[in-house]
Length: 373
Image (cartoon, rainbow, N blue to C red; front, side, top):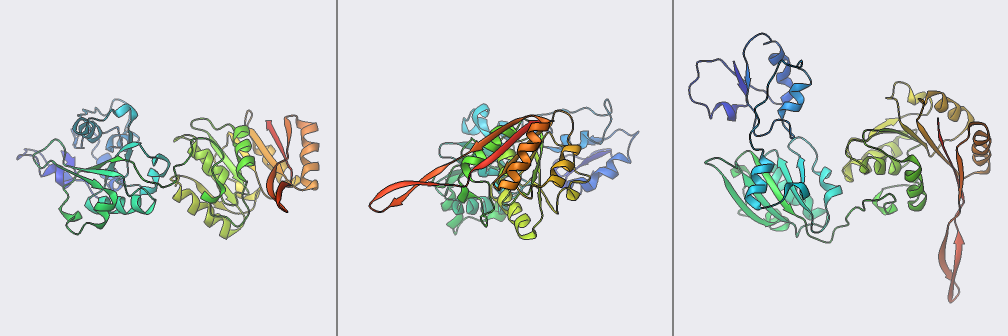
């Protein structure tokens, strides 16, 4: 039995074997494959099946020792060899089944990226996306069917591809990748906590930039960890947690439907569509969520919620809560006296016009409690 996509099967000579054409979407073919247990089966996949490939998905469903992989050079390797780019300093992304916005954290002048794409239409979408984000000057190398007789490459800026009348996406041969030499005046995302507030759509319910930086420092995101962002507002804390490392996870819990939707829009726009947004009121909305390694309470702080969250925390989990009102400050002071941890009072001021001169205008102070369960 030989299984694979139609384009792979079409490349083979006549075989004395039954051929199974793999369906789209990919996961729909897994039950049929598992039904063939006990038979000799070959699964065809392009390049290295464990680098944004089919192998990762299939191995989750197969037992150890039940399969063997025979990788060959990946599209990334072939593209790097064609362009002369070092893979160790080039961002490699598989966007054939993912939103183009996952590129957003990597868009900075001078950066390079290799991107796997679904088809020619996705090349056109990528060119339009880059132009729309202010990176239309990016040089795009469109790399088609690398390593085979149909191989073809061409290059232009994203804006040129976006506006070209002689560029026909349907003529692009699969598999297709794009090599990006990023250029333009679009805003690059900083690689530290405390992104500008105007990157997040919000109605004023947002942990402001300096306080957010201190909050993320206290939450201390680490690879693979899960965050609960309770009272998410614009989702800014959960989003920056996810930007800290590609393996972090986060659930944003927000009582208001409009703010929950805004959190989702912000996460998608900033390339972390893996943010899970839960519309509901804590602590009831926390039932059934994956156990966290860190929790942030940014809204709705009260005794009932704080006690419920504390009881749900596993040993070693980190809790950070911010208070603005005198009542919530008193609550955190009492809990710190009982459970320990650290209290921090954050008092900030900004310069404002004061007649012909300038003076300081104080913001509302924030009291932050951080503690390990």
